[in-house]
Image (cartoon, rainbow, N blue to C red):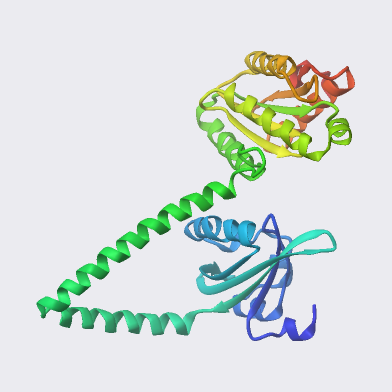
Length: 327
């Protein structure tokens, strides 16, 4: 890191798109009481309380994804002693050697908060004086109504931004981040409920051939149409998401192995029987059912291994991990 940036009068943190800390300057380490090894390769949200994580998800990620930058995000970060330190964060996204990086500048807000508290106190005194006069009171009522209106607009906008941050722009399905969060929730709940659930990985067969033959726009049309099929034929509690490229995932709550195989076969048949502008389009499916010994990683690995077998044994077929040889 450049020595001037390392000793800059403000904090500097560089993170990946997934939130992992890549680099941090000495100024921020000194203010927060950390060593570099405490933060590098850790998730930036490890320094946040639950409330600040919600702020980060509802404001930072949506604005970075939509605009490529965030300006003046007020957020608290925990120092090495666990104390929340207020910061004003500015961030900007850019590509560095083909890797998406987000650089963040952090200005500590201690003095500004004191000034704001003084301003709030002065405002309260002013409002009390205005309330003594009927005309001023009426004006304040109007201001309060305007604030409520703006707050309602902000809540609506935040809800939209949160929806955008969890939705795949091309297909309209949920994105990989949302899928991983829901998978974690189901795994956490499994220890309490012991309700079975399963996972499907659906992969379009010969998708590269479709792109090479008909062009990427037609390929996108195929992805959108497959997404609409998954939406239309998923149950109310199922969670369908685009995992990446031509791969889609579906979480099937309250579904054991045999039932997940039946559902997967039903979807495979519908896809194969659908009329496509490119001719016949098929998909291979890998399925796995969660067990007490599983984690998110092992469940995905089992479903991916089953998908590989579906591909290697002719495509356009369903394989469940429980049908594979152990080991």
